[in-house]
Length: 213
Image (cartoon, rainbow, N blue to C red; front, side):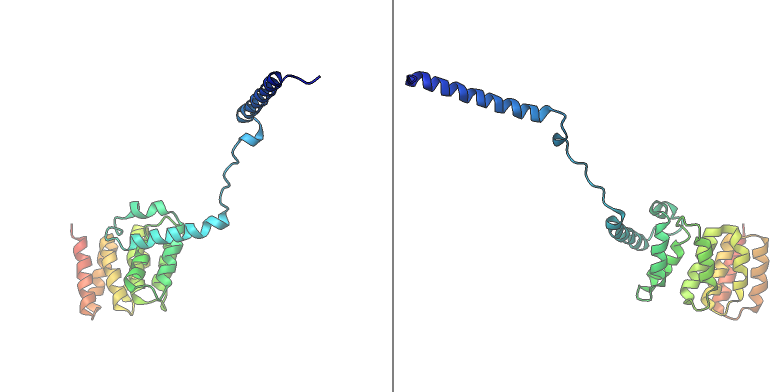
C-alpha cells in the first residue's frame, strides 16, 4: 500500500534535515579535529643558493650607499660594523675594479679600516707595498693602515717616507703625524731636509704639527 503524500513529504523532509545535520557535523569535525589536514604546511625556508644572490646584491648596495655618504669615514665604525666581514669582499671588488669611479675606489680602500675582518691589516699592507697598484690606492691604503693598526702601523709606514711616488709619501707623512710619538717625530724631522717635492715637504711639516701638544 502506498504511503500518503503528506506523510511521504514529511518523511523526505526529515531525511533532508538528517542529511544536512550530518553534513554540518562532519564539517565541524573537520574544522576542529587535530587531524593533519587542518594544519597549515610550514613555510619553506629559502635555500642558501636561492637567497645568496639577493643577499649579495643587497650587501653591495649598502656598501656603495655608505661610500657615497660624507659621514662614512673616520670615525665611522658604527656605520660599517653592522655589515660584518662580508663587506670587506665587496670593498675589495670595488677597489680593484678599474671601471669604478676613482673616488669610489679610494674610499673603498680607506673604508677597509672600519670593516671587522681578520685579514684587513694584511691586505692594506699588501696594497701599500704593491708597486703595480695605482698610487691613489696605495696612498689610501697608508691612511687606512694607520687607522686600522694604530701605533703598530708605525714601523710598517716609516719605510714609505722614501717611496718613489709623492702621493704615497704625502699620505704616509700625514698618517704618521696623526699617530705621533718620538720615533715618528725623529723620522719626519730626518726626512724633511732631504725631501725635494714641495707638497711632500708641506705634508711632513703638517705631520710635525700634529705632534705638537
